[in-house]
Length: 236
Image (cartoon, rainbow, N blue to C red; front, side):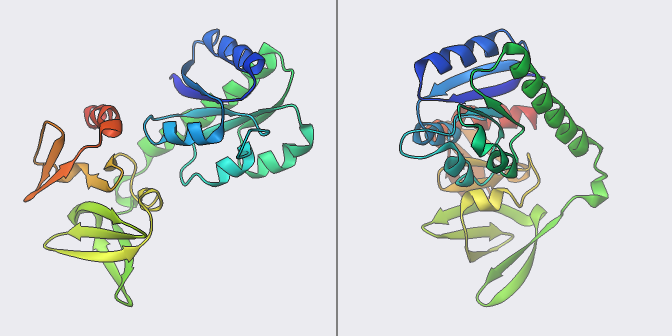
């Protein structure tokens, strides 16, 4: 197992130390170094990331506040010169909290925790009995609560602060965000293919160019999502 890793750090010396440690650790793959949280946010929209090495004292948006903005955050290891934030860091469900300067041995101990956590999550998903998995979702629309089978959902389209959920031969308009809805779905069965679209993998008829045919509709594949869509479909 190799964890796709992201460094969010604004100080070049610290970037160099972390990138060197990652290169020396065969179980990590460095995807990119981001100098601030906003650059990291843009990357997370485009690339699958398993683990973030996150500084707390960042320009414009702190590491802790950045983490709070993420709907489905990857695993996080805080790397900071400020030990006083340790409690708040662990309350944010961080895997570990490294205080600069830290040794490679201490870094490796934190990474091993992340690897064990990733393995546990993977084993849980693989060993979960099929009949215990969620097969429906409750959606509130028109002052009613609808029970919608996941197997009937075709795709979801975002329009402002609302989502159109297309299923069977109808659709519902519900309040929410794409990232919030992805959290409710079984991992792997629904994927984001565009900034405005989620699709059901099981409902795909075919893919042609940068479009996915589902029923009578063609769903666009966003340029920044294409590589991840291909990777997820190959896994599926």
